[in-house]
Length: 204
Ligand SMILES: [Zn+2]
Image (cartoon, rainbow, N blue to C red):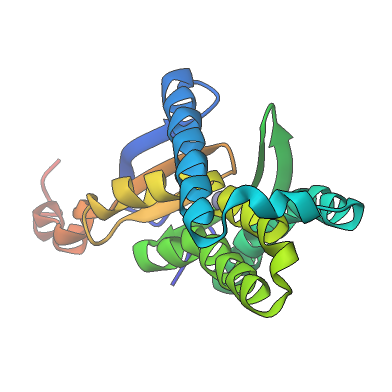
């Protein structure tokens, strides 16, 4: 279960702040670009570029609208799962190149946060695969370029999951959209309610 406040005995384990750590932001963008190119190569084998010739105005418009709608849907899905696990205020925003959704007052368990982080890429990815299968082949690239954005644009989500997998089981995640904190609860192993001082109330 998620919490609306940090429970007692939890302490900060790690903080990732994309605004401060420009190096991580740079590498995530770089890797994202490579992944986007790689999806293009996969697409080429599925459907060679000769079909660019039938790329008409409707498909170009659909692609531009689709790329824009994708960004909004991706963040809305993160937000939907955050709200599902924790009743708190969602904050949406843009920071230079990236859109974000976060919940300042939410502290999610490891499993909850993995679902929150992966839900957009899995759900939208499945929807795009279905569109690719059921729409006429002339639409292949208009859909597949959005799929490339889906897979490559989620590098930040993959990154936080990889870091999260290395944390202890009792970790809680707080994500305000642009920065994230992992809190660990090792303190729970200590029984503070059995503090020996209480057994000697006369000691001054
Ligand atoms: Zn995301």
